[in-house]
Image (cartoon, rainbow, N blue to C red; front, side):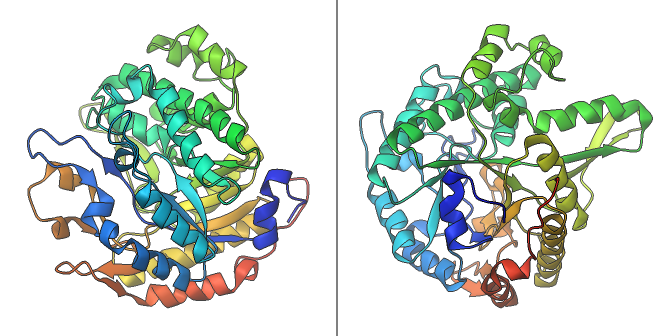
Length: 425
């Protein structure tokens, strides 16, 4: 590895490659009007009752780090009511088992008492306060925090589709929510580092790769690809009048003063996590018979990882890691993706791209988001993506052959993914 930056030295001391896992932690606290259902993955998969055993399963893999979400809506049930018991117990057990948590502070949903969600003018201060209190509880023990998982996807579902609070629709809604989210990320990073200057903000976003075979859709495809980077560009102060999206942002409601605020308050991107999936991440634009275009999602091969790694490296020039990946389907299909994606990681490292970690996510099944809007039992929405399968009747964690396979990769340390070659890259 290259000489580590000071705030990454702890990672370099532990291992030259960061093997990780995690548990799906989507928390949508607002009920869907037609069904009354919320979407709390920890409740649906039984993690609130099995958190200690689940952390022991993590430890059995040999991983030294894990992405782990804290349910803010349970920590802070009202603006004045704080309950740290779950966070203290779960994070404490991770540390006791020798696993460094990368704390996922917000995973889509917010406490329901925050009216207007990300558009609430107090939101940036509220998230910063929550983050600072948690960091203070674990000062000197936890150094890795994700201010908000997948800001672009959050803005899409909250602001473009209108499925999650604050239920805005269209590009104006998307940009309004994105601006609130990004401002919250900046405030959170500042507060975390004020509590402990050794804290490393881990910025994690979904990493769609857009393509088209239709020359009339090239401009739209390129704009969609730029939108993929929007959250990272905003918080790091890269969005200026020369930015490709500047006119588009102004067209759909962003103010020049708001954009200038991000340039004046830019934060560093010390480590970027790439969330990618072979069944979701590749996006292909094509014309339909009515002349409108549609975005399809063909299943991708392992080269998806290599393409995205190079794309992010060329743009940001910072260490990267795979913060979420898995395939949906049979154990054999999941195994192929594990092998193929790790071969791509090896390729990246051999060509000097600083890919320093890999996360199989989730470690056991998640409940698909359609559950919130559906009427069937939770087991009917299980997405088979994990190393363990969930038993539909008991929620027992049933190991698959993937557990042993991942253990073998983890045991190989950095040798399993090859050395990181240094050079002009």
